[in-house]
Image (cartoon, rainbow, N blue to C red; front, side, top):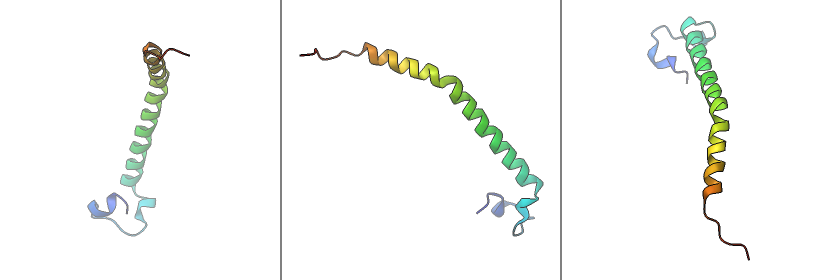
Length: 64
């Protein structure tokens, strides 16, 4: 089911293919996904470094 199907008074079968509202919705979703990917790409190295630092500070059992 399309998100616009229940709320759009102009909805008809297959109209999303040429609908300006639907295109706008898709563009916003795409921009939001790209922003999330960029955020994760930026912060992943920092997160990984922090995890490694905390892991190195953990007490380890003595080796036998």
